[in-house]
Image (cartoon, rainbow, N blue to C red; front, side, top):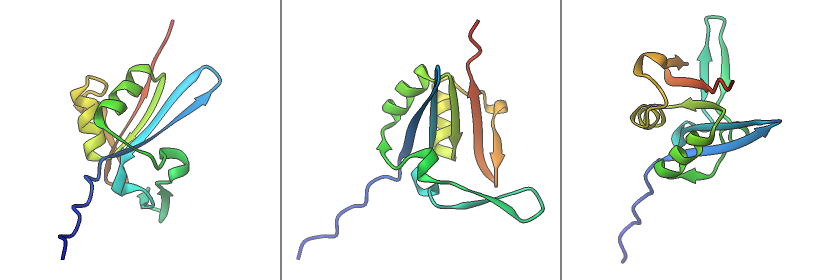
Length: 111
């Protein structure tokens, strides 16, 4: 009998959206896909969807490559934020939370 295969690391998922001249990177910790995150106190939620964040798993190197080119980024999850902080894209004090999950948005101000 063969041993059970080792499940892959949870990793990151990412989708690149091109909106006019913008290069929008949406990325999150893979295990967050499909979760409903509470927003505010009125019982509303926001769903973490593959339509926005993607379904394709990417490596940290690939995510950093995309962030270097992004004009806008939407990042969700502890691992995703840690990688963005280590890459110099997000200041630790510049991150917030969405439904209790670390979250940051980045906008490149081009002159």
